[in-house]
Length: 157
Image (cartoon, rainbow, N blue to C red; front, side):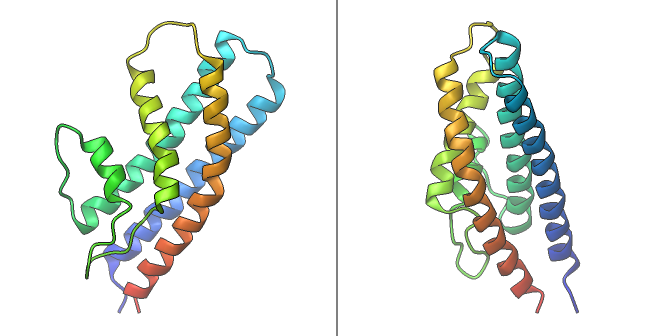
């Protein structure tokens, strides 16, 4: 018999992948149509990255709650991301590779900065750096997610 909680987690992963795809399609269409480095474009690019990371973080929280649910309250965002790299003996395989983790850490830092920054003088060099990281992390996340789905499916056999 299949484990309903694993099937629920697989459903959450599937839903997250669909949302990430929508964010990616929006982002790609936007940057292809908007090449100038205006404030408005910077806001849209920034929010796309923040939404992308927040969507992933929400999934990571659901995975953490399913398997271990023990996060430090004062730095739970960074603790959660770090824990996604752990293989927890007899509990779960890592969700993320170290390489994926290091890139996503840049997005976590950016989101933190973005939430506390209220000015309109965006740093396009920083945004372009994140654009490069974004293109690099997408295929890595695909591999990591496929590996984690395989692990979850093995629990259902």
